[in-house]
Length: 185
Image (tube, rainbow, N blue to C red; front, side, top):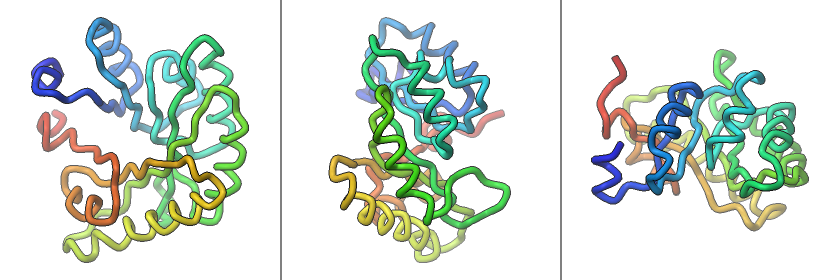
């Protein structure tokens, strides 16, 4: 992380709360914007709300309310993205496309959260053309959502294996930990 920071990288994501909090505490004096990009368990919301700057995986109002309540008024609002289950996979987290608007409206009312956009993790696809389809669908949902929330500015989509397709469809944040730091052991 320090080597990447020295090269100019300022935003870093973590999938695991406890591991992320350890790194954040160890690097307190380093100018880093920390993004939480993993699944959110109710019992971990306090640690997320108090240590991270962004959360990309908000997929239910209960979690959003807990994050807002636990963020507190003294801190800058927590920047959040709604996780969309763009392929409607039963084993994956995220709201369906038809639930985005209602969750966005509810999050926008929470005092210590700032809704920034949408995030997805589509199923793996082989060709670039096939990879682009779910990202295009999320971009379309984002465009629709912006009519009610014109302040939105973030499409968090694409990882190391499909970042080109995500960028081609308008990603503003890509999550490329494997390409940057190697596969997890």
